[in-house]
Length: 333
Image 1 (cartoon, helix red, strand yellow):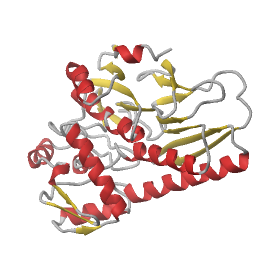
Image 2: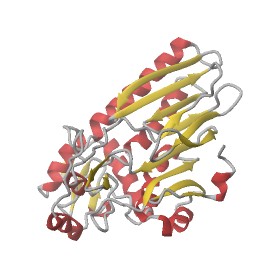
Image 3: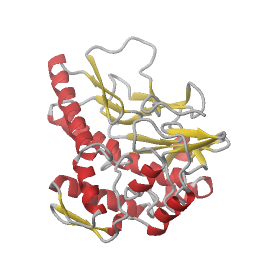
């Protein structure tokens, strides 16, 4: 029986080339959201770069403390109120994030569904170390039958209630992407024009790395090393959903934290899906919208990507076969 160590598997590998970095490359690391965070700032004086990176990391810590699904947080307090059928008072910022997550959930036909925190907890993924047993089938079916969805929520400016007490919120598929978008806004406010922010493999680029784009690698889902490298342009973000981040194995079968809300079971049709997104909310969308592609599997990969407006994707199916969209092929090295 084998259990993955949470936070030690990065979905994207940091690859800045083998040569010496250009002048004025400032880098800072921290551990937030249960994973390694790396901030690289190019071409700014060290004092300015340090102040900007410190502000970004402070924001990450604030989001972590607000959105943690099982440790004391604003979100866990909200979940306790929803479980009792009550109305909770929350900050306007959290209310706006819930509306945003609900819109993304609707767009994905509820395959990205932050309302299934109860299912995720039942599978043991509301813990720093995943459990090593499969939940009771009747308990899983009970959650599926209750069909918790984001549309069950009534979200005001500073209040939330739910007509379905089964709704338990888990924004783990949203928080890192939102943090990337916030990081870009903070860096720009500090006068930073060129940076790369990597939150455990969710990456966004600002400007360039000297005289070339920022370069990242897409990690192989079953062995060390990269499948390919990719140059990220200004404003582009990459998000990966994979079954090798958080999982446990029982009797040779892998159970990951990516749960199909229709069945209550961990999705098993893919090893990983990486998408490249640009434009408004690139970080948030790259995080959230990789989930429906992973969960719905290979048969609907192309249709789902088209419907969600995702032209660039690289997917590895359960058999280890690689599937790359035509647009993504032109971007990969």
